Length: 154
Image (tube, rainbow, N blue to C red):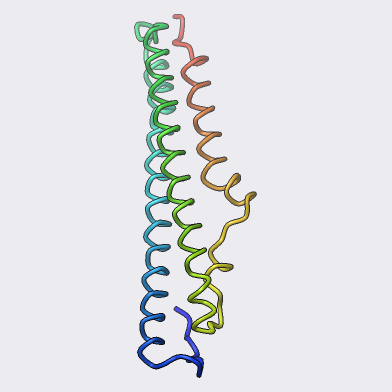
């Protein structure tokens, strides 16, 4: 947490109220970031498990083979999971952006050393490469695994 320098133009009570509001916003950003991480890690864990499970089961014996209906159901589950994760991560990111916009006025009122709204705002490229890009790549890998991994023909 950064130290606030008390501007002379506001009363001590107003300063404390603004500081408390700023700290609440800062903690909300941390909560939202943690929520994004949990959604991301659970989604990727499930997708990687699907990849491993399909490879392990299809490699076990020739009796196990994914039928077209099974593949379709598994692919629809993968797409649903990835879409749901994408939506919730995006929703949390939008919420963070709104918090940062609200936080700007407290940055100014409190004359902060480190401005919260600049420090925590992600660039467009960071958002694409970060959570969204990784989820997309693992989703594509899971779908390709379901489609193309064949059981051995012994």
